[in-house]
Image (tube, rainbow, N blue to C red):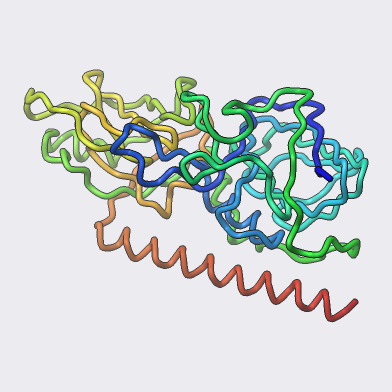
Amino acid sequence: MMITIQVIHSGFFTTVQGKGRFGYQKAGVSVGGAMDSFASRLANLLVGNDADEATLEITMNGPTLRFDTDALIAICGGSFRCTLNSEPVSMWKPLFVRKGDVLSIGACQSGYRAYVAFAGGLNVPPVMNSRSTYVQAGIGGFHGRALRSGDVLPLRAPVIAIREKPVRWGIAFSERNYVNGKKKIVRVAEGPEYGMFTAQSQERFFASVYEVTTQSDRMGYRLQGQALERATNHEMISEAVTFGTIQVPSSGQPIVLMADCQTTGGYPRIAQVISADLPILAQARPGDYIQFQKVSWQEAQRLYVEREQQMKKWKMIIQQKWREMDDAR
């Protein structure tokens, strides 16, 4: 028997996202996947899934969902007002829902995106080894598009037992406060064309505060601030780009490429956002401010390893919490 969720209201822009499509850039296919992989992965771990299982990615304003089955879910990411049958519920912890329950996720109060993980995962077919939605190509996720009111989402059977006992533990605030504040410090390493910019522009790039404009989406963020100038008018051929690449077009205003970015670009790459700070960037909304902070590539690698070690630590802690709950039954 198919187990499903009814989409009563779709929210502003809700898509299925998880692990990206790695290995297909040479064919021009974007990697995509969750914008805030930290929140998406932790939500999955909280419900006993593999960290890269597909989740619902919510932007700005969330959906209303009716459950046709008992389920175990977790909501992580920016701060959203969430209710279950009109009663407030907490984010960043496992939550049991019963058949017939209605989950409503309202507008974001801080940050910009949240992720809903379902024990067992969403039963959508993988495309190029990923269940993530790539809207521009109409592939992956739920029919290759954002959710609409009236959709029926199928779930896979959970691998963890659905328990009715309330969960009194979750992810510590210190781990999730990166979503807070209108000004965000984002660390970057020098890009391949960093030397194409004047010394004054190199200094300005790190000293300035840039505003995230309304011309921002999953493909890229257009920033507004002090313009950057090149030291040479040398024209580039298209070069490889990826999530977090910062390009500077002729306007001098930086563009930060995001999860659904193209695979190549012809603008000089002044910097690259480090992997550990991509979740911070993903939670920036139009009107927020970003200041870039320079780190070495060696430091970027160290911070990446540190983040992955922390993720493994959280997986062990969560698994232990579930064992303790089983022992207490």
